[in-house]
Image (cartoon, rainbow, N blue to C red; front, side):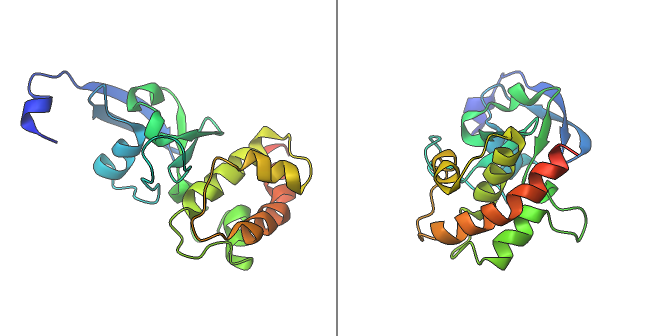
Length: 169
């Protein structure tokens, strides 16, 4: 960041649960959640794609709901629970959605994969999924330039029941 931009600006301390761990961090009021994750916290699984909320590469979960980190100011995370792709697995045990993506080869270059997986977990949290067409519609905010959509759909369809069950035991 340029010294002229930050010179005299007041940083704010925010407290949040980051991937299950209490975290406090100082941020400038204009810093996005995406830049906080990647530049300050070294959590680079969340990708910067379009930086305009149109591609979904930066999708994370805030209080279990999917959001575009590029459109969310870091100060809005104060008191919230933020889960990134790095926080989905339990140690070496992959999240059911992550396992399904691997099983179905639901990625090619892998750039969009973290956002796709977080969005699919958020979709499960919403509990309103119907058929394959419904999944396609609800995942339409996450783009894949490689065109792995059929594999992504197969992975989501397979992991959805187990993921929904984990949300609502």
